[in-house]
Image 1: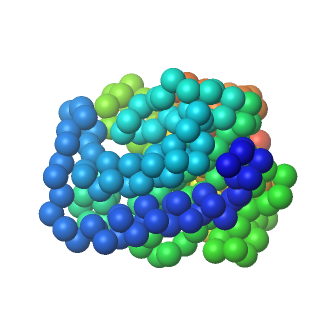
Image 2: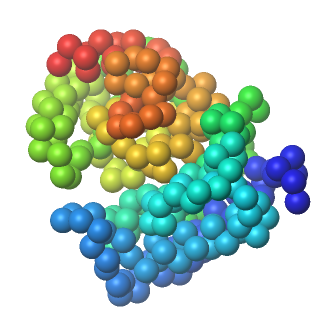
Length: 261
């Protein structure tokens, strides 16, 4: 199989197969592997990641893969996959059903295909560059909200960086006083897909990871949203992966408020 034969439907199928593994294991007792003081993985993370990587290696053995649990393979970087087998592992390990399988493909450094599958709700968000974004096959679009006071926002909270945590708590306080509220889902992929589908109006994060961001960022863009770095630059997809993503009507206002505060 050649790269030209890669299709979005193929990636959707892979994500759903991994999602079945996650859904079937949700209520089981999990083997918890601590990757740091607060960072963890379960046996389901590894099983979902193996399923996705096995599909990629079988079809495209020379493609590079950047995966949360396995790290990076030293293959052809012109064709690169980003995998988060369970975005929201802490939620999952506590049996909180807010988690997703996230997979994206980039060609020559440009994100091209993206799938975020939420097994709990059987919701599959997907996008193909230049062709649009979908939820279970139906087109989606960001909201038409044009002012922060009308907006419902979301963010993430770093668990290990005390300086960034203190900074973002201040930003949350300000935003919570000047919007319809700020939510934290514990899954960047879920939160950004909710922005893409108009359930939320914006999300900001002071830091993230490539595998958290890759798929949902393309879905945001193809759904008509705007995503930039925290300083407003278009090159958001680089360390430390801080970003602002929103419907166009509030992006400049979000940017101004977050920079000033």
